[in-house]
Image 1 (cartoon, rainbow, N blue to C red):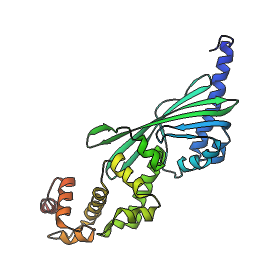
Image 2: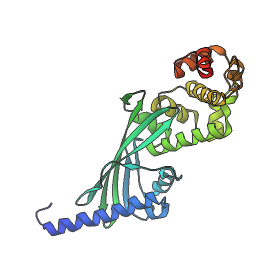
Image 3: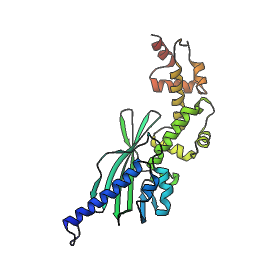
Image 4: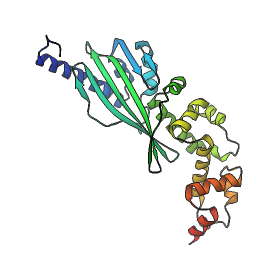
Amino acid sequence: MQPNESPAADSHLTESTREVVLRYHHSWKRRDLEAALALYHPEVEYNDYFQNLRMGLADLRDYVKATMPSRQDEFLDHIDRVRVDGDTAFIQYRTAITFGGSLAVFHSSEAITVRDGLIWRINEYASLVREGSGQRQQVSDTRSATSRLGLSARQLSQLANDLEDYFRKAQPYLAPDLDLSQVASATGYTRNQISYLLNQVMGLSFYQYVNQTRLRHLLEQLRPPLPERIDEMAFAAGFNSLSAFYRCFRQHTGKSPREYMRQLKG
């Protein structure tokens, strides 16, 4: 508090800031782009430190449109209440990405400064934690990579959803010659963006993800009467070699195909 500010004035400033930030928060929950943009000060500065981006008002329409949740099942999990001190509010949230049997969580925080009843400054930070197989791994700083890719933490979540939707609906993995460039062309993302999601965020190579998806497809097809061998089913699921199939099968079931089939038959 400045020497010439009374406690009452400081309290009023805090509550005024809280009201603006809550309106901003609710505009994101409602996916109301225009309401969010209306709350930015003409001299707003938005710093996305995950992407190493600094943006002014002219840049924010495209940025907010790209990062605002667009689907009903997308949401931000707030992990603390909104904390306000004078003209600045602090929010913390996480965005979870479940993809290919792995879980990655972006922990994010924003410091939002209000001036003249509008948002004047936002400093956004995000870090990535990869979880899976009973392990939790802090992923090293990758800001230079993400700044080149043009994807925020929330946009990476959208990319994961879009990629899973494409694989589920179009089943491109059934083609044994599927490659990364074909997936990039079909989804509208770049090869580098998809590779970053798979390699750096989820800890998978492209072909690991594709073969895991092929294996899930095959296992879903195993219904009575069960075949004596499942080699033909492996090729039908898109595997282009039995060695790749056997390796993937054992890695994810802990058994050979023969042992697994014997167990199913009782």
